[in-house]
Image (cartoon, rainbow, N blue to C red; front, side):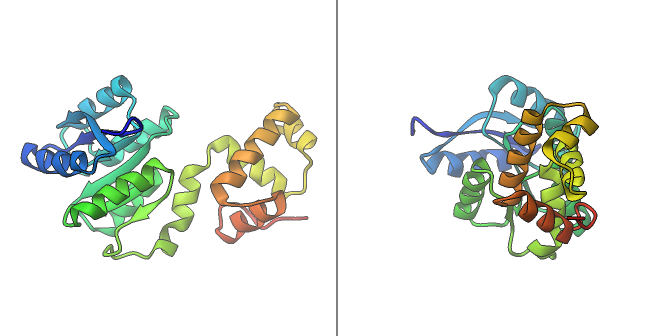
Length: 214
């Protein structure tokens, strides 16, 4: 096992399924399953206790499915990667998972190596969508980016789109210039932007905010 092994909490209410997933994740060599849950409640408890890098969650489980677990995890402000691993390929489930803050959505019928790669990807902060899903990545880009931005980051971005300076944004939100700068840095990273103008323009194109007024 690598010293930098990816720590995973695995949640599925079928023990046979969990066993199979655990085996091929462990065989990958750089992944360690640090906890297994058969319900949403237990998954949340293990996430709090074990501090995993990634949570691999089924959609349907007693005590709250993977989508509810993802929502609760994001409400707590936890930054771990969340991979939904399920047999459901219905668009409403997919969109709900992304809206809840999941980084990836992969079908259980995927090859073992595809699931292993998905775990690695979400651990690195990348988004993963199974190529066989009946939605295109472009359809979900807005939902993915919106889920990544915090409410305060969206407030800062909206004010930046109106042409306000960092000082003016700070005054409007009752925060310091330095805090505004920190929020903007986070926004640039999440949107893959190199400047305020690029971040605002991209966010407007994706309909995350109203059109800018530079």
